[in-house]
Image (cartoon, rainbow, N blue to C red; front, side, top):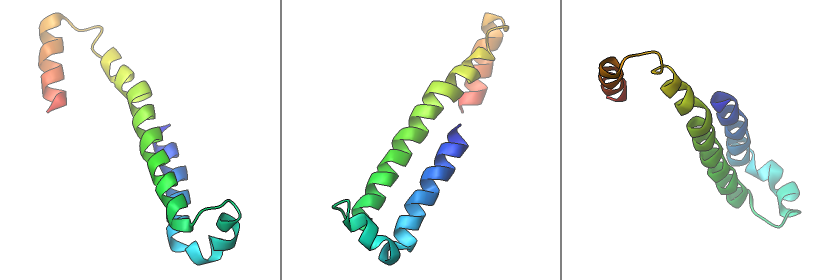
Length: 82
């Protein structure tokens, strides 16, 4: 999910930056400039990527430690977190 979120919002962000002159009339109809829209999309990209990482990736990573004994868990977490 995280790569898909980054890909979709990345395309929106870079299209706003690179094609700002062509998009100015349609974005002006929404009452904003292409630069402001790019800032909003960039902020949304950061929020969505962090939230999907913390809600999906981190719990899956922690589930990998469940079948291990306590000593191995501590050593594995220390090695992976570095």
